[in-house]
Image (cartoon, rainbow, N blue to C red):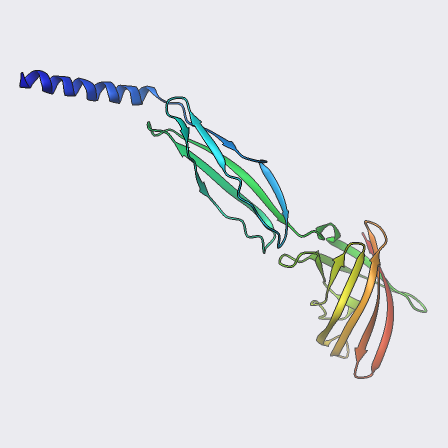
Length: 211
């Protein structure tokens, strides 16, 4: 009698093992929401999650890995994983893009300062990776070392808040810039600003045209 019970237990183990080996189909993981999602820098990311279904085990709750830093531009990946009783694993991924709303202004510009004659130079404008709708200038006013000046894009207007560049230009001196401007097209904008130094104030009209 004891021998029969042991054989029955062994047979059950073999049957269970055999069933698990026969299950080679991974769970199907389905995203809730879009596969690719774009949000504004310093905006809000809402995790929508995913569902999973297995042909043997039915509904399975997937795990979630990855995170989104809404305070820094970049491309982030969220991975959803579900594993069934047989050890088969299914995954799905979501791509989340955090972008500066002013990133269309990235590029190299030909800059013209109005005068007699006009003064023309080239510089690069880059959307800030940490502050939404902010752009930075690589060489504002064409002064040597003047890499820290920024402006904020508000609709079709541009605000150049008062900021001082320390020891820039030739001769090197502190220069304080402040002004406003307007976007004329997808490739052109203008700024009217003042430049203050210990020697006085200069009023400047400058046009920026993307190359």
